[in-house]
Length: 363
Image (cartoon, rainbow, N blue to C red; front, top):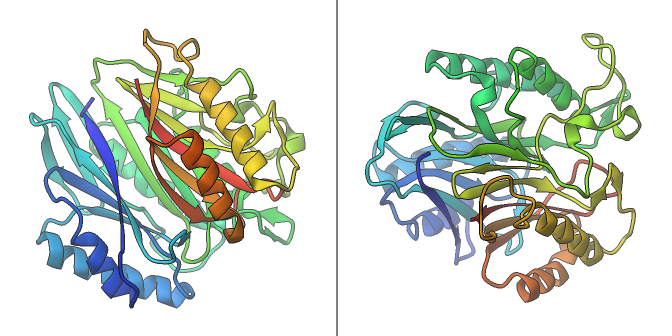
């Protein structure tokens, strides 16, 4: 695998989107930089599109004509400005091929694909239609570089109005059905990717993927003894009607985590034990249960390779109710002070869930 790391930067001024973006990007170290995930809540869909154009222009001004990949995620940050999550290559032997919306990274016989935010080629359309179009593009990108869908090891799925029902059809379920159709083209004998499915406030569906082939390191899924695997959920916990193309609602196709080399990629995790949600209305209580589940996931005895334990390197915390962020932040800082953390306002994949946390741990 190609060694990578993440760093978090935040805007330190109030101002227009462009002013805050430029302020945040000027803090970013350009050495080894390959990708920026940019978090900020737009006013509406029109503002989101305008901000996308601003990101394209300003990143070229700051980083030159070969700027890093970008994703723009319409989620409000805890400080109300812009948060940038930057991904760096730390492997001095790696070579990088620049393509429009992905990078092909090679090192020591290993090849990785890292994408920016992949969006539909059209405006509007249902979540299912947008998702089918995105996965068609991902499939072409993978195959043109000799990859299969099952080479994906990490995926992020950003879905506007994630739990909204449209004529009985739920947006998250529509996304899961489109993903299942795409994934059905391959044999996933090595397990599914680690993944996050989370709500956004504007724009369309956005997907990011990382894929790998030729690796000489561990690349394995990690189950959680406290949870049923999401891809084995029963129909009882899935929502929305069955679409015409399928005989039943399909399950979310992801693993609770994947270990790749010395890094553990932790999927979006909420207070779900077995397949049942915590229906409590205290967000800190749900945060504590979520971290209990994650701690079990990355415990020494649960990681399926030889290890001396793992420590959290990065935690991305999605909180449904903005007013709950200060209490959640206090809890997380008290119990996990060394991990990089940032906090976002976002809807979670079940209406009763108030928080979701994803992360990266280092063995």
